[in-house]
Image (cartoon, rainbow, N blue to C red; front, side, top):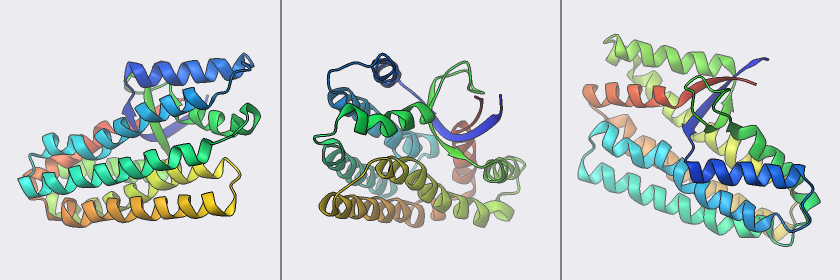
Length: 229
């Protein structure tokens, strides 16, 4: 099996269970609508993703009250935007129409026996070159070359925002066909999340001291996994 690379977080039992149930219902050809279970899966996924990539950095980095406020308010904006969008995307969809979205859930769900960390994870796939680039920066910072890698780490944080939006949000949205109104709502939601994410990078991550950058590199490394699948 080929090796794939991900920016990923360990899934809770609730998220893993919802994803497995959704995939099994689809595989078994269940007649009842998949929409309630899809919405339930997203209800777990959205806050867990925001915790992994935003909120949990507060504890990992020992951030100031102002930086903590920026991150929590950003997570709140993205969370509310995403939760508003989900019902719009799924409304009145048949199970057949939802098939591409369910296949997407299958793609981002990394089973524990596949993952390099031995945990069930939910993740956004990376190309190998980007994965290696991220790993190299982590190792450089750990080796004490903080200033030499400061600009590169900041660049990668900005890249991460775009990678996550492209690989999780945009990709999921594009799996379904949309009318003009829903497409405009989706485009507005993406723009809101992108601006909020880059705002955190510029206001918080680009202003970290050397010790905080080391903590960021160590934390970021926990989000980089490979998988045989």
